[in-house]
Length: 396
Ligand code: PLP
Image (tube, rainbow, N blue to C red; front, side):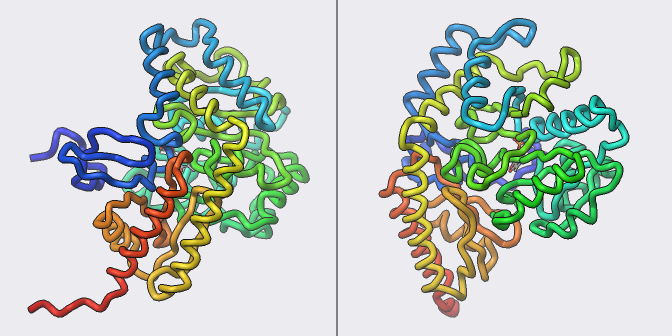
């Protein structure tokens, strides 16, 4: 008989009762070091006092009022995102896919309002992941997500990631904009080459189209800057956020320049739950930590040590780990053995990780992870790699 919970996930047979910092505990007292952070989402780890207090206090006062009224918590969160980004205005929603859907709508709407309704197509990249809604499985650069759900939603053209010539060739009279991840997360922690985002910006400016960045996974401090594109010289016209924004509370956002946001007049777009007081209290509590002086720099420092230790491990076990990828606390081990085997070996050592495409094991610990947690994780990965490297003893 089918389970009451729909069988669309491949769940490990593990249930966590509580968490503290980067650690999760089962009801029977086993503890796991969480280097998956709920797929790059629990940015402040588990049981963070500031975040849990903010949520509890806001829940006791008022959770939801709808967007028929002003929401001071949303106004504050939007102002802080604007103050710390290229953006001039923010729309709140509930998930990454929803943020990306809205981002596409804003790109098309801006083109239409600027006298180019014929420009409606979006260029996306092979290996991209933008979410699971009908349009976003078409934007996502992997046909597996569409199988059985077709036909694909029209309007998304795909070109190889990190190939600016292919990108420029793909821009046509119907192109409205480009959407890219600064680091492809689900696709295998594949970083944009140094000239790639500047090249996208230049192409957008030359052809009069818009640049949208999907920072759902890379944003909110994950790479050591508040947004990953801040490592480059360029800014997008619009950007999607979710995952770490609420530290585990569901909240997404679209950050846009005034030239884009001014087209979103009353009636153009909306969502019931988006930007409610509770979600925005969570977002503000996350920003209290991430924007505290020195916090982002400390991510860079801790991540540099973690990466150095992982590089050493890769050099020691080249038959298992081919390469270390990524930036900040979004790292990938490109493996020569199946990533699921490595994930299982890590789990056996008490380390939670997340598989990614291209046979990569993803590490995305909470941003509050300590140097001791990182050393413990490397020791667990070392034991896991050693176990995989040992020749199997023949069964007796
Ligand atoms: N965009 C990127 C880059 C993501 O990594 C994800 C989720 O993994 C999404 C969009 C979709 O986000 P959500 O699952 O919140 O809809």
